[in-house]
Amino acid sequence: MIFFLTAVVEYGGVIKAAERLHLSQPSVSTGLKALEQTLGQSRSSTVPSQPTGRFA
Image (cartoon, rainbow, N blue to C red; front, side, top):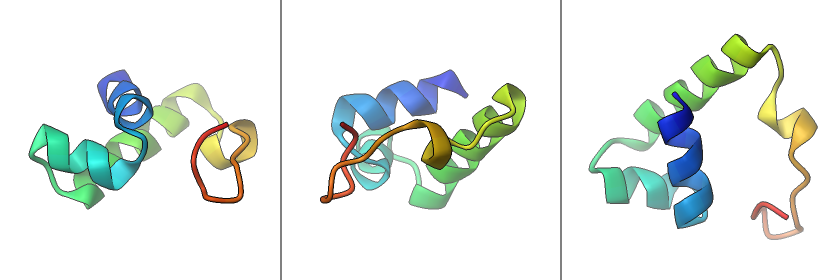
């Protein structure tokens, strides 16, 4: 699950990470959701974003 998070950060977004990993975007999103549940927090409530939607 952390693999998905590191890929999203490295490639700059869920869609680009999915393309680079040769997975569908929903698969990456599901992996991120599972990580959120494991950690007990939502990434949208803990990761600040810039107006473009990219991570700060």
